[in-house]
Length: 536
Image (cartoon, rainbow, N blue to C red; front, side):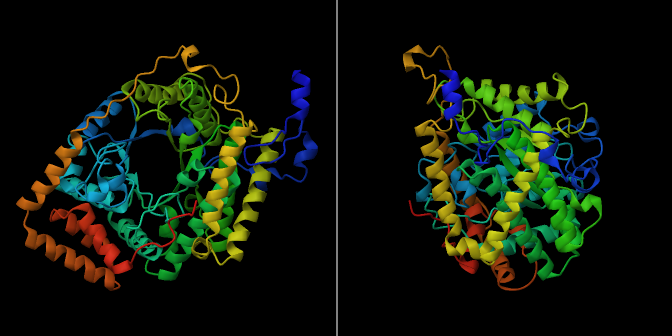
């Protein structure tokens, strides 16, 4: 029976790349070690961005965290650091992530649910109260939240030059299944991203100010080939915009760029994806922009396990999936890792799953001895072949985007709307037909009453929404509203002109403007995005 099933099975990677039964030296003929693999810390960086990789600096353990209220999130951040987590990441609720205040009528039911609401500098100060900002790096999610973070740090007496972290600035509004009519236009987002990167280059030099994230597309079913092509396509568009702007040397842009990707369950493909990404970025730097200084060619990447690979059926099985995903990211050479909570298909992570997430990464670092040598899978016929194959296919995808006129043109043409739709359909079809096996869901499935796993579920506090709305309304009554209006007007004039707008964003938040008030200025000046919704 097993032999018959194996003969019928199509052996492919999750990206659909056919897998041979055996790989030999013939599959890597023409591979030149110096040119194609090389040494870690040197171009083409196939083996890693640093010479000694994890022997010199372990990957950052950074969970994406936010719960209910700023006070609750602060307690959680403190606890994470006590458990040994080495970085923080703000997980905002939906209103905050889309630039709306908690008392906006559109936000009913979403405030504090699956993230922390941050309406003003007041909330940001609560979130990071008592946390030593110069001893931890923070992933801040959006430019407005980063501005609040900087103002909060200044209020506490920190020199911004000592702060480290990352802002995923270039997550241009690619098509999604959501109708988000309040999103700022692509052109507006590009302007704000460029202003932010330019300002931080001088004022917050340790900050990764151009963050390219393709986590969401991958989590919606994009393949590793599409993920690589999309990631580099966005990075090239951002580099071209910086070069065209011409205000600051191009080298400054490359010094502080970083990337974020999702890690799915195809172990070897995820390893090879990171190796291919580093090599491709090195080629882009040198061949397209003439960047040859190794430090400026580094592909520094944050990896988070792909949420859609964690399922509601037999949720403890997700612990294994997450562990293998984080092992793949480690063997692939990522710089920052987030292990999802095993229970995230059911609820936001409980204390139990949070601890398991942190311990999973600590076990990889401390117990199983995979970080003692650099790129231990290098030289495997299969690994080197698959790295090459992923790179070749990703270049083809990039060429397709170039032929459409680049990323922005491809978005506006509806190309990515089609890609999203097809990716979602393919994901569901493969699981429903069993083409992609999900143990406990479409194979070896038990009846619910037969599953022995007992899983605690996070219980959302429904009153947190009312408390947050009361806080933001109280702020508007007690602040100097004339000062706020003046700051917002200055920001609007700066957006209409050519001067850098980011200092005015900080000034607005310092005056106690709310998140939506600042974002509304952008919406007014730059217009709204008309390419964010895909027709399902």
